[in-house]
Image (cartoon, rainbow, N blue to C red; front, top):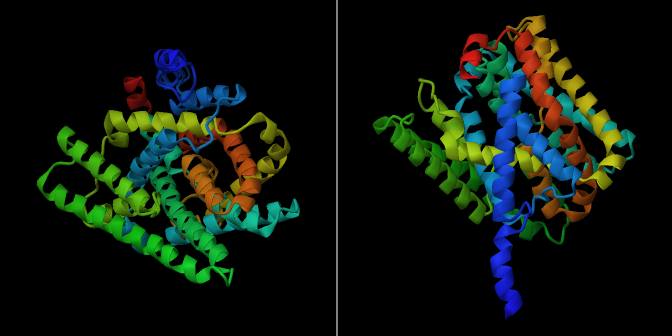
Length: 407
């Protein structure tokens, strides 16, 4: 009885990342460090968040991704960011410039093939190499939206960068669904049982995403979605769709991405949102970047870091080569194409969630996949935003004056 009473008093004050005190202090530290990084160095704030995560990882206090409250926060942050990414993708632009769509397919496909070949050269089994190649083909919309928003970047490279990130995220989510389904359906004893949930998840995600997009389009006819109260309704609708997707075991990544895509292309006018849906979304994004930055472990990083570095180099070279090869017909200069190809480097929350979900369904392959994926994330979490910033600066698409004003 005494022990129970004492734990009731002391538990809220336990200094652990998964307690209220620990989470509050981490959020405070990440926010302060983000502001220091932004105001002193002029770097994106997310680097400060990732630094806090790195310290947690070095201290052995990093996130595993299986904490219920943390996973809910990460899914919420990704839902908002993927919705925003989908809402920026104009399908009419792709119809007018099919070479841009060809560039997207080429850079995602070539990156996947390059990662597959490198993994096979390290004698990694096909059932591990294939999902890791699919995950690595995607670029993180979360990192790009954060960097572009804070630097007030605008121009051809910026717009194409966000479009390619949204498209190859869509490819990766669909391909992982199909690959995971293929593994389940390949067993003659289980394929009949596995077929129904696979089809339900796939088509259910599309229907819920379209329904959310249509509902928000109807709302937008009567409300200015940039106003504070309407923004609360928008945020609540996206999170409600996320809860529905998770409850019905649909894709929590595909639903918001398709909803944003549907909403953007229901009207010819562009949609403009406050970044990440205001303060609530900003907190979720901060939590996500801290968690991703802390996800790796020292004991698993050392054996996987060599192969992870080789994969990152092969992936970057493949994406850059594909973009350069199709630069002229897609209407992009060579220098711009080089900046665009190199800026397709980030991997973050989307890749982590795809890996966690795959490992939950296929434990044997996931045990081998996750250390390599986490090593890639550890190497990219701090470096990738700086590369993106440098590429946008070289491309001349950073609004220097406005950036000085907000600092």
